[in-house]
Length: 119
Image 1 (cartoon, rainbow, N blue to C red):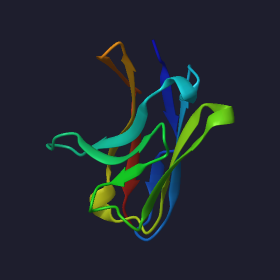
Image 2 (image 1 turned 90 degrees about the horizontal axis):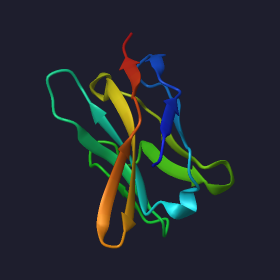
Image 3 (image 1 turned 135 degrees about the vertical axis):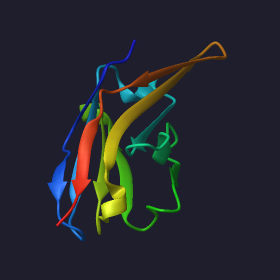
């Protein structure tokens, strides 16, 4: 079992920046992949960015060159640095972790943190 706790959301003006954090209750070394998803009102949850245990990263086209995903293994924490924020980035952002044990995938989610981009 992995517990994930997000923080760092809030209200920011267009063009501003925020950094989201996700603290895992387990060592990141034991997790195969982590990522950030978001869900806007009336829309499906979508992948924003992901990072594998080998530090390979993947971004949605809508956030490339604006968002950066990273981890601090010593703190068991994943980050999402969000720059040049746009109103369409407004959503609840969720932290996700996946462990693969004996070919079985286990998915874990945080409770979500609200990001609102508005003037």
